[in-house]
Image 1: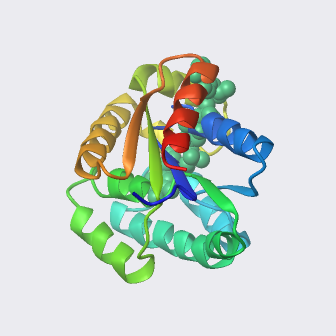
Image 2: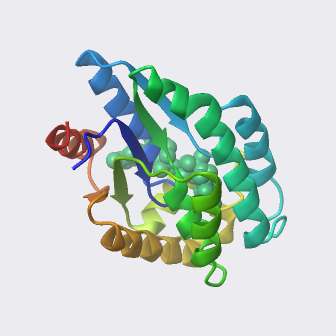
Image 3: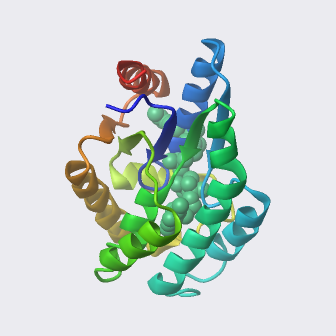
Length: 206
Ligand code: ADP
Ligand code: TYD
């Protein structure tokens, strides 16, 4: 098993990923690790500009195919400018979302585009996290939490509850497919309980 130096958090909107990514980064920093906490879409200046294009506006603003190109472009910039330099400098990298989000949001919700996602990933990204933490959550509760934030970046939340249910199934299927890399953690608990289980999983792969 790879030591977990590059860790991603995945899950549906409002599942608690950002909260857990931050709690893990704090914990690892307290333990003396150099940690970079980052997010997608974004995590570099160019990718943050692409983020704005993707997350605002009408639900039908982009087709799933165009989204694959934009998310992959953002990821390539994030990888080149932020993730790879941090790993090369010996830091642990924790990212709030990575390629599994594209596999599920673009690859498995509006037709079966998974093969297209995988081909572009292989061509332009070509790496996976050492460990992926999937926060599994009841979609209705997660959607309530997500929309309550009123972040102004709700293009995917605005696709509705049925969309979030499809996403949940997509993430669980992916976790099954990539069992050596993805751990599923029940997010329907207090933040501290979830964080303790996340930390145990990371420690098991130190
Ligand atoms: P995500 O990054 O998956 O969208 P967030 O971490 O931003 O999720 O959490 C969404 C909202 O739910 C936030 O307002 C956050 O404070 C709250 N939240 C996060 N984790 C929990 C939890 N375990 N129980 C209750 N509320 C939570
Ligand atoms: P995020 O800021 O993590 O939103 P949330 O806090 O609601 O989970 O991610 C932004 C949105 O972008 C989210 O709805 C998921 C979507 N997304 C994709 O559709 N494909 C991708 O490849 C990525 C990284 C995100």
